Structure formats: structure tokens, C-alpha cells
Length: 503
Ligand code: GLN
Image (cartoon, rainbow, N blue to C red; front, top):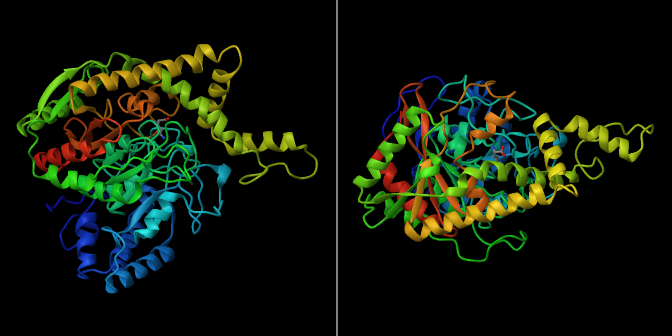
């Protein structure tokens, strides 16, 4: 591990500093009892206490619960019964997943203080793998946003520059990782919410193939697009976490039963650095006008690095990607308008006006007016309109057709190449407040990540450098066909090894 000097809240990575180690290194040291999970967990809790006041990555820190899980992990290791390759390595969980021992808010006032009666499948798998949960991370309300500024609770700052956004909607998880408050994190990716925060914080994030990570207990944003996924600081760490959370779940109706590819083996093989025989396509539609110079320069360098590893690079045309933004911002709001109807003030969450003077309808209206923030309301209105009779065919129906065309573009591309690449975002992280009043320009930040969600395929963002013009990180997006998530890890690990440390 190389040292990266501390500037402000960004990490210290000295080898004697527990929070500077990768998850793979921590796992090894815990397994060999060189370090205990309690020590490791405590070190991260201390770092959270020390710096999160400045960053705002966590909405809730569960110190006692995390330490209890760490003690159990240590006991399992001592008994020779470590349940997973990540036993004892702590993690930060996006507040979109339900937890029985911590509030789940999904970044919304609507669920302030809400305690779930059950754990999400992802939460349960983490617990079963002996992974202590440090706390719940901040996010845009109900995962709608690209900057985490839509959280009803707090702003999260980018550890690289605290005047800038950490990406969204999973900005809390990415900021926690980048500042070494956690060695691993979980995010969700509906249109880019894992990859885009990863790109702007120089961390790694993967949106797995749709249906391979259970949505049971993941609070719904847009169900046909939502997918939980792993976040880490290295490709191998991310693979180790991917292995823990992926797999069939009978409680999720869209869970796929096909076997998840061996992503850990792929990451280890990739680290060997040989990509000869691998065909890589550069998506013509995801570059050029509107992209920051430093982002394009970093992308070109990444192409050279990949070629140097033996890969063949060709340009690939995906003509319908230019309509992805329009289709996404009809399909997503449509699903949101339906999914968020459950927040009716009757069953759980906020209830406003229940004083005996209002009808049930009025209580519902008052509650929804008070409980949802402006972006969520905007999308509920757009979605309700797009689904309304007379407009359904022109908007929602048309968007679904575009979605099919985008999936066909991917299918045609993957006949020619093994993976596709692009920048993860058109620009580096912008300043806090810069786009809050301009939703359209906020939406444009997701230009490169949306097509993958619409097609249900897999993608990774891996750090590719820093734009010298603003000193901010840039991400490389690697995309693969459905159920070929292992390709992301092979190419990502090879690239990461060849690229070397960032910043
Ligand atoms: N930024 C996108 C949106 O606002 C994606 C969100 C996500 O992936 N959850 O919808």
C-alpha cells in the first residue's frame, strides 16, 4: 500500500493505521488474529467520531451494535468458524436498506425515526457473513438525485474538496469510503447512484446485473431499475463484498436464479494484468461535446493503458443512448409515482393532521405535503402525468419502446466486444448548491450511467485519475452484459494495477 498524504479529511493510508488498510488486508489480519474485528471496528468508529462532523456521511452510527457484531466475529474466528472471506471487516450501509437495530429513513422526513420490523436480505447477508455495520449513510431522498443535496437531513461533502458534492444518491457511502471512515460500503444504483459517487470520490462502485442482488427490504425507488451493489476502495475489495450480497432470493420476485459469476476469481485473475484477447468497445455516444476536457483526457489515457495490457479497442455505436435520459426520466417517475403511493400516513411513517378535525384524505394530503421534499414531489407529478389516461402511450409507452431499443444497442455491441467503456460522468464533482435550482442540468450528470440500468446489465466505475484543472477525481465506466459481472472485475482489476494509485 502506498502512502497518500492527508489533506484535510481525505485518508491517511500509512501502513500502521488500521483505517488505511484495504478490506482484503483487514480480512486477512482478522483471520490470522493479527488484528481483532473489535480493534478494526473501533478504529473506524473513532475516525467517524473524529471527522464525520465535517463530512456528514452518516445519518446514524450504531457503535454498540457494530462492536457487538465485531465481538461475535472475533469469537467465530477464534472457534475456527469464520463465516465469510470478509469476517469482521466493518461496513457502511446506505439508508435505503432496512435494519431492525437502526432507523431506516431513506433520506426522507416521511420515515424519520422509523424502525423496520425486518432486515433487508442484503442486511441479513452482511450479518450472516460476520460484517459489522458501522451505521447508515446519507442519501438523496428515496434515492432521487445526483448530489445527496436532496437528503431531508444533511449535506454530505466530498472528502477531496469539502465545497463540492460527493455525488448521489449514494454520496454518504462514497464519502465514508473515500475518507476511510469505512473500508466497505453498500449502495443502490437506479440510474447511477453507485457509479457516479464512486467516480467523483475516486472509489470503486459496481451496479450488478439486475436481479442478482435482492431488493427485499430495499426501499423502492423505481423497481424495474433499482439494484443494490458493492462499493470499495479497490476492485478486489468490491468483488469480495459483491460475493457476499449477490445470489438468488425467493423473497424478491425479480431475483434471477442463474448462478452469479465468480467475481473474486475474476478480480484476482485481472490483477495479473494480462488483457490479451479482450475486446473493448468505446461507446461513441458517451464522449465529446459537453464533457470536461480533463475527463476526456483521463479517458484517453485509460484507453492507452488498456491497450498496453493487450486489449483490443474499437469504437462502437449505440445510437439510441442519446434517448436514454428522456426515457429514464419518464420511466423512473412513473414507477416512483406508483411506489411512493404507499406513504399514505396510514400504515407507517409520518402522520400529519391526525387531530380529529381532518378526514383521512386530508391527513394523507397534509402528510405527503409535509413529508416529501421538492424533488420527490416533482417526480411524483411527472410520473402521474406520464401514466394518466390519454398520455400513457405518448409518454410511458414510448419510453418503454426506447428502453427496448437501448437494450438492443447493448446486445448488438456485445456481439462485437466483451465489455464497453466510457467516462462514468461527463464532468468532475460540481460545487454544493451549484445545480439545486436547475434539475435538468443535475439530470445531465447521469448521462453515461443511465443506459445500463435501462437495459438491466452490469457496470463498474473505477478511478482513472484526477483532472489537473480542478484536482478532482475522474472515473472510468466499464460495462458488461447481464450475468457477465466477472468481466468488470477482470478488466477493472487489470486496469487498476496498471494505472497505479490516484491522487
Ligand atoms: N441520479 C439519478 C436520479 O436522480 C439516479 C439515482 C439512483 O441511481 N438512485 O434518478
